[in-house]
Image (cartoon, rainbow, N blue to C red; front, side, top):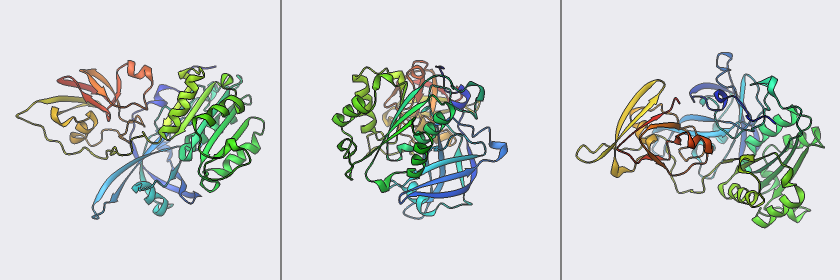
Length: 389
């Protein structure tokens, strides 16, 4: 078993936007599409990626008054690495401005700003032929399990396709939860994987609003049902790596169940599509904050692309480092602003901060001083963070 999934340059590269042309828009379900972007050869190295990573899309759309405003949304890459293209799936969210626009209006030939791939929801096993072909793990008998719900299937599709193709000794079990059969994204592709790897790929569809033959696969996945599945359908003790992707409640329930069964935390990879706090607004640009010349301010400094920026932030404003930095440098990297994606990651060089949420950084990264600047606020009079670190 190898100990890393990819080179550090691939997993944690400086995120930058590039304008890419839409090559194809394919309907997956009534509320989901797959979008293929053309990647020109001169940008191919910038868009090299590991299965499980995501890209952020940036687009100006009109607000309720017709005024343009910038939206950024992150979407997981749904295909195994192929040079010259990036494929993402976009599912329409209730009230989602970007996802609704994409499902209704995005078309072949459109040009959108796409951020270079990022994210750490990747296997710790070597498995990608595009990035490092000589180090693919083709010998070990690896057992993987993924638990996904709804659009959480997107990165899991890329991971499953890659590991099954790379290693003939790999087995992959997928527990996939949806409301009904009509909501299942990549239904045909999943069936194709089952046909191609009948002895190595097991697919367990769980439908909350449709009755299936097995009671275990009908209704919502609750703690009792999950425990039964992980005790009878899947042998927890034999699994080398777990991939969990979906809503906060489901991911946390699975993590708690695995912990109770003695599964080591380092074997569990997870990614959230929501943080469990739907009332928390997402940031798009720095919210208006004015330094209080007569009051107390934090002195925030940051390094980005070799240049240092400085900004004052009123103590009373409880402003995040990201928000403060965006007020003086609009190209500071971010995508979700919810502590989920990790795009705004930076290293604290001097000073101290408190981080509200962290669903993206690994424990060893936190120990080394890395923080999510969208979730971090100064706790010392001055602080310096390095986005280039």
